Image 1 (spheres, rainbow, N blue to C red):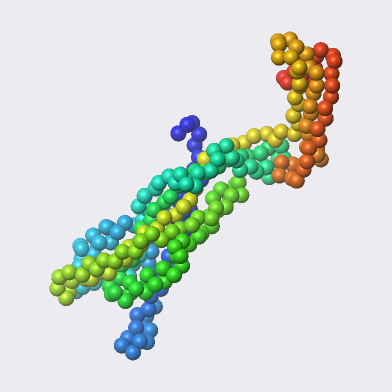
Image 2 (image 1 turned 180 degrees about the horizontal axis):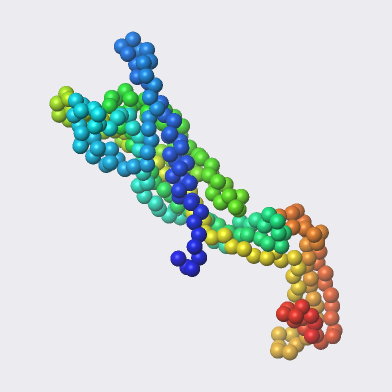
Amino acid sequence: MFGRRFYHESMRKVVVAFGTIFNNIIIHRTDSDGSVIQRVKVPLSYSPKEKFLTRLEQQPNLNQREMAVSLPRMGFEISGISYDASRKLQRVGKFKKTHATDAGQQYYQYNPVPYNISFNLYSFTATAEGGLQIVEQILPYFQPDYTVTINAIPEMGIKRDVPITLNSVNYEDTYDGSFTTRRAVNYTLGFTAKTYLYGPVYAAKVIKETTADIFTDTATGSTREERIVIVPNPSSADADDDFGFTTTITNFADSKTYNQTTDSDE
């Protein structure tokens, strides 16, 4: 689009960061005395809720366990992407970075665009107790948001904090039928990640001197009266250094003008 191809994996990084938050949830199974007999790490995958439900419906009979989907399981998916006007930044603002080896080369990128990415997180367990264990390991961290840091544009040195807000928690018990019919306790948690999408990175030369001629008359053919030259101080400073400026003002009465193409007075 617009003749310039770029891809910073901005949304992909948010998806990966979101999944990473929930990829180490463990539930305990206990006996009648309350002793832990099994620790189960809950598998997590990027997949829609309907995929789990369809698989359970295809083989709901507990007597054929070799064909059944093992529980507990968790899954998540993107449910929507929307523009967030409340976080809009100034359009002409820029991020800048000097080339690592060439001080005369600079890269820049305009301010990113704010977008909200909505996620649904699903948990499926065979018992109500298992579902409560999963939910209780998640909810305390969202008050109502949890912030992750993303290495948004590594080549520009840009890192971005992305708050992930918990919006809703819904419960569903799919148990129906005889005692041999499989039960799946489902919790659906809705989240919103407030992120930014970045445009292309541009390259430009670093400007180390500006020259401006001042005229007292706007008529064609009028002559200059004054020249202002501005250079960095020190002159050896790079674009990302801490430097000042030296301004030189020169008065003229020679009826000449400065030619930018030839860099000479004519």
